[in-house]
Image (cartoon, rainbow, N blue to C red; front, side, top):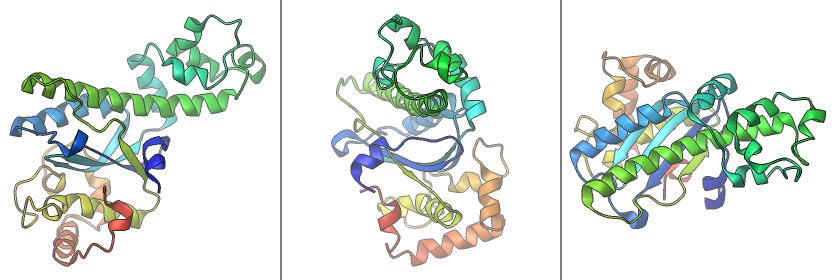
Length: 260
């Protein structure tokens, strides 16, 4: 996948993705231990209703997430509560009817209603596309925009902490679709091994900010723990496969999941 595809690929309902981003210019995005906790807290507040999280790894200068976008029905419900307007750039892609006041088409609820309209009624507002395509595109915009706002919120907190006004993250986050179960399992393994991969730990038992220990815990979690453990045949096998992978990893999977 090209770098352009990695920053423009739409986030589609009911699909799995590997999402990642790094500090602008390779700078650290977690400068204090409490920043990791703050990132996860904000992440839950912003994203829990929009996608399910299957694994994560937070490194000093970058992060990885494995997620599955919620269904169209759920996205429409939560986004109607969280969004009042959409961007002009989004609306303009659909060639608005010049006779319609622009403000009407920037209203999120108005757009949702148009996704349920007949093609004839839709054509009164837009000169291209159709209601079904508008709904799909609107929900893809919602998911990406919600995540963008999360990153901006976290970056603002860090810049306030550090007294800095520069950009914290690379401008556009990257994403890759995860299409099959083998790839999903491989990505979970890779994310949990990431601290070792980058030289911040020597084995999986070292303290780190990944979802590995949460997967092995009985404590309540917002992660899709039971589904992940099921992929590996239970908790015991989950640990065994991870330990074997950590010992035997040779980089042969890099072409699929490395962030460089």
